[in-house]
Length: 287
Ligand SMILES: C[S@@+](CC[C@H](N)C(=O)[O-])C[C@H]1O[C@@H](n2cnc3c(N)ncnc32)[C@H](O)[C@@H]1O
Image (cartoon, rainbow, N blue to C red; front, side, top):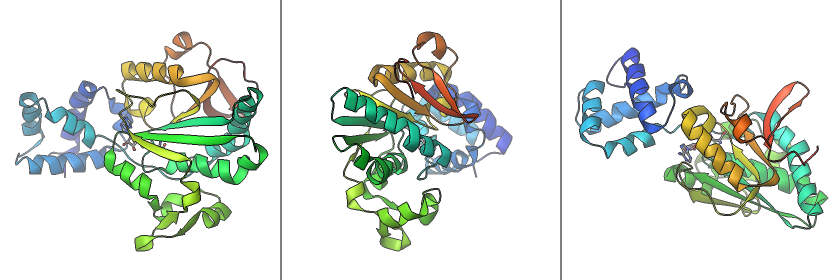
């Protein structure tokens, strides 16, 4: 595995990641899967070890985008960090829906950035359709999921999942929203797919058009990207958020230090001592 020992692999990552705008600490715990992929790539190229691969990268600039693909971590599941989705269902989405209604608008627009195989945008769709839509009859919701990985997005469009991926989803919702799918997997029913669309986009280069009331970017930019890239992406989110809109980041993540000065209108909320990592654009929205 990895065509070198762990220490050599760590040194390789510490050399390569900054050149891709990525940061080593984000990869510390998940380096095993990247190491396997790079090991396979070294074999494919008929090279012997990491040092050869490093020389290959030096001589073949086009290989860097291949390495970037190998460094994508795609772990995801429905209702990942269940408490966060509880707060989205109980607090964030109702506040946003009420705000949109007050503004006489009829569409609540959400963006799940780094949506993996659809687990996160479909979790939002389930919350809306099973818990909230009836309370806001004049409103519809649309969700766009974006991801840089085309194979992952193909799985999102198919929406077949192993049972383990649904383990944090409330059991009655699991029953309501899924049916048996191929090869022992569970298939999301069509009615829960229709408000979600997907785009193959690298957030470092492109964002979906229009503005959003809710943006989720969890376990991507603020874990794996370097500080300069995080700042840039935060600017993109600020630009694409409606006034009073909300940005949700991973519960173990934090925004880059400069955020407080560059994005003063955002403030974080705490509920029952739990950091929810929700940031509002402008503090006009009171919940
Ligand atoms: C660890 S998963 C997180 C999935 C989900 N947001 C969650 O928290 O469960 C990160 C996802 O971001 C995607 N990704 C990685 N780099 C990306 C980039 N530059 N632009 C868009 N998506 C990216 C990966 O393909 C992967 O599906």
